[in-house]
Length: 337
Ligand code: NAD
Image 1 (cartoon, rainbow, N blue to C red):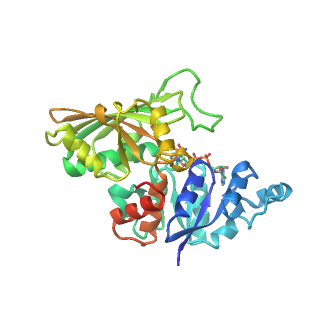
Image 2: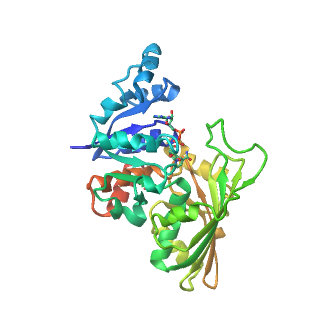
Image 3: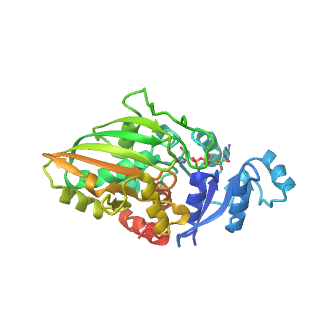
């Protein structure tokens, strides 16, 4: 019997999570919610998904637009084991009492605070913490990116201290909101919240961060400096990442010099929607001086958290004890390896 999953909020993250969940042999999407009869509602139906109105008062709008729904969120809650909340940041917390009342497990995204669930998740770093839990938050795209490369370093060499500068994309490609068109905007509240957010999954890690918002929509770019506990070579660092899941080494020498070219690679690899769910690290940008490591990485904000949501479901539903086995099952099913 497959675990029955619902998605509340079928937007940038929700539609990708729905796609990835439906490709797993042990999970199925029972339905997704929309607030309005938009093109995404029609795409959901085209993908064979069952549509539910987020609120009773939305149902009429769907009817008037000639779009068939299977009921409302309340109906969907009666038909699922777990709800993945992909509503905009800060909205998810308003739904938690509803999920709890229905006795349905829930996953939230990085736009919600850690306090909402008390458990924040990354499949590599703390899969076991979500084991059987009623409610878990998958950390944000930036935090996921930092953890994907820092955790293997910590495992292989030990970390004294991390400093990271984040160049953040100003908006997602389809957004009408976001950064100024021709200006860089530094985060003035320092150090930024990204360091503490990494510590929700890598407890005790000494990490500080700064961030600048840039007028680009493709990816985030991180400049990371790590004081390691031992002297290592660049080759050893690259080897640690090569054997880590969801990290892809790219090469400037082979023509991948910027985030546009990274995204072009994702398209050439035939990745659905042109997404790059793994974190791209530049081979030639890895430098070690004594025990200080410097590197650059690029994060596709729209998709890196997607496989993490799948693994989070497996841990919460106690479907797979071993995190690496879950990661492998997820990645094989969605063509990441
Ligand atoms: P989005 O705006 O693209 O999608 C949100 C969806 O929720 C939309 O379909 C919207 O119609 C729907 N929605 C809005 N209000 C709702 C309500 N009251 N009830 C039900 N549905 C409602 O947002 P997103 O980018 O997919 O972000 C979702 C979550 O994922 C946020 O917590 C965000 O911080 C997090 N996240 C976003 C990114 C990213 O870069 N886009 C990356 C990682 C995590």
